[in-house]
Structures are given as C-alpha cells and as structure tokens.
View 1 (tube, helix red, strand yellow):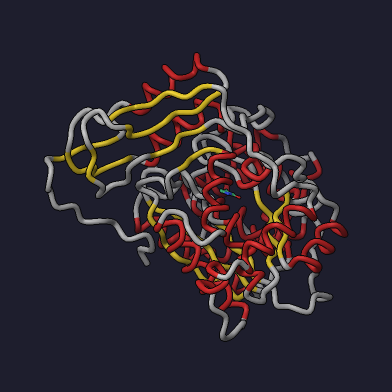
View 2 (spheres, rainbow, N blue to C red):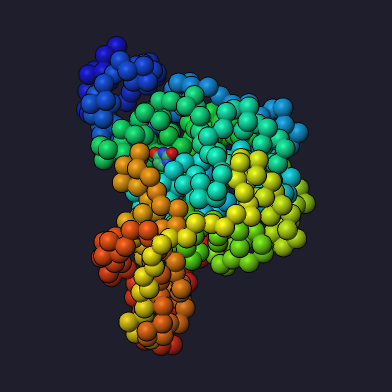
Length: 422
Ligand code: URA
C-alpha cells in the first residue's frame, strides 16, 4: 500500500477500500505518511466526500489508533454531551454538574478554543487552581466521587485524530462533514460513554451555516454512535446570535455560576435543561427533574465539589480584565440582529481566544452583551462592554463589530429564533 494510490483513489472520486483506510490512518499516526500527503487526501475528501461505509471505517480506524476508556466500574450510567462549537457556548459548565446531580455520571472530555469559538477548558482554567490535565485514574476518581468530570482528552485517546485535526486546521480542510463527524465521534466512542447527546449548532457562529448541512452532520454522527453501541441523539440548536450575555473565559464562568444559582439568561437555562433531559433520557435515568436540581442548589453542590476535586477554588474571585470599553446603542428601537460570528471574532481579538494552538488566552477578556435580539434599546445606553488586558486590541475588536447588529424602529415586531431548532 502507498499514500499516492490512496490519494489518487479519492482524487478521482473513487471509494476508499477498508484496507486503504486502515493503512493510511495507521501509517499517518506512525509518521510513515507525510503531512503533505495526508493534507492532499483530506482536501480530496473535502471536495469529493465519503460514503457511509467509508466514514464508519475511517472512524473505527481512528478509534483503533489509541486506547479506549472503560467506565464499567461506575455504579451510575454514563452520559456525555458534545457541542460542535459556538460563541458564548458555556453550556457544558452548568450541564455536567446538573446531570450528575440528577443521577447520571458525566465524563466530559473537552477542548480548547480555536478561532472565533471558545473552549470549555480555557473557560474553566480562569478559576484559580483548576487543572484540565488529569491522568485516567484521576479522571475516574473525580467522576466516581463527584458524578462529573470535565477535563482534557489524554494523548492516548484517538491520537490519529489529534494529529489530523491539527493538520486540517492549517490546510483549510476542517469543514468536511465526513471528517468532522469521524473526528468528534472517534473521541467520544473511545472515551467509553454509554450515551451521548450532540448539540449541533447552526448559524453564522457555527461550523454549519445551513440547517441542511447541520442535519447531515447530525445524522452522520448519530449513525456512527449507534453503530458502535452508544445511545446517541442530536439536537440542532441556534448559533446565529451568541448564547447568553457573555463570550469570554471568566465572563462565561460567572454566567454559568449564575445559572447554577438558579438565575442566568433564559436561553442558557433553556438549552441547559433541554440537553439535560436528553442526556438523562439517553442514560435511562427516570423521574429526574433537572429544573428542580437547578432551583434547589443540588447542581451547584456538584459543581463546587467537581471544581475542588480538580484543584480549583469555587469561592475564589474570577479574573477581571484590566480595561473596559463600552459600545452604546446608536439609536433607540428594537435590536433585531446581533451576529454570533462577529461577536466571537471580537472576543477572540480581545484576547479570549488564540490565533495559534500554543498561544495563551486572557482569562478576563471578552464581550459582555447588554441586550439580545428582541430587546428594546435606548440611544446612548450601553449595548456591549468589551474587556481586555491589552487596550490596543480595542480598535481591532471594534472593527469586527461594525455592522454586527441592526436596530429597527421602536415597536417593530421581532420574531425570536427558537433556541432548539430540531
Ligand atoms: N470538533 C472536533 O473535535 N473535530 C472537528 O473536526 C470539528 C470540531
């Protein structure tokens, strides 16, 4: 077998054989297939696609490239959630402890932000002392004692994906449905969760801009999970505007704690509860009431124990950026549009995100919203507050926010986009 014949097969719109797929994933992981060859193959896949059998084999080969975790020693059923990524998407933070408080175990392997989308680990690292890197034994211990753990995937889990994802990121080949589906599902299946709820985001701030593409990605991932014995369901949810009122690391932790305290923005609460119900249902946990677990403080108790078990101080003050800049509404009226992508880019440019994988992030940086689509705004009143430690970044962020919102005449009817689309 050789890389050039595999590339030619896909370049010429052929179907990759199981042997070709197994070989190329294994040889790439071992360094025998070069990055330039794998990037040619990834581009051929992006342009010409893969059929269901090819995607299934590709996913299985990526799982086989590393270890599989085993949670069978736990007394509770396991449920995990994966979001395809968005702006202000802090849902994992309240969701994991909430579902644990309702009786399932939540092994949540999470990632870091890249580009305009935030990462759960970057957000949690704004809590003083909190550690994302746990050994497999530590992860199991935190999960067993608190019911939930949010941590980084170890190097041994789907190493082929780790290498391939980094390559796709710099070769313009991230946005291929077969590659996204196999990347996400190889990690989730190798992680060993019994059930999985996928939050597939749709809109300007998401990978999938159209509902049709989101549906195709969702059904591909549900098929892969189901074929590997993981009870998998997907919700398609709106990402045309940011979730909640914050995009940034410590800012989003603060908002998540508000949700756990029984408050928080309505859209964050609604999505957290919708995903919690799906996770509990998929895990077979009956008669749990997630709304009650938010209201009575039991989800907050799990949060505090989970953060402390990973070295964090749940009572510590969160970092605040050194500088703020307020953007005011240029007119009075109804905010009819606030674009997720533009807000995400602004938060990223203010220092909440990174341009390259190895860049640091600022814990306090980001964008705080004072209004959401549908709200009445008054000329001169604050619309957004930008936060950063490096004020020279304000200009750069302000440029990305030009044209990011529309204000219609006072009293204009606004039809709200539902949070859960399908
Ligand atoms: N998230 C992943 O883990 N992989 C992708 O390919 C895209 C998003």
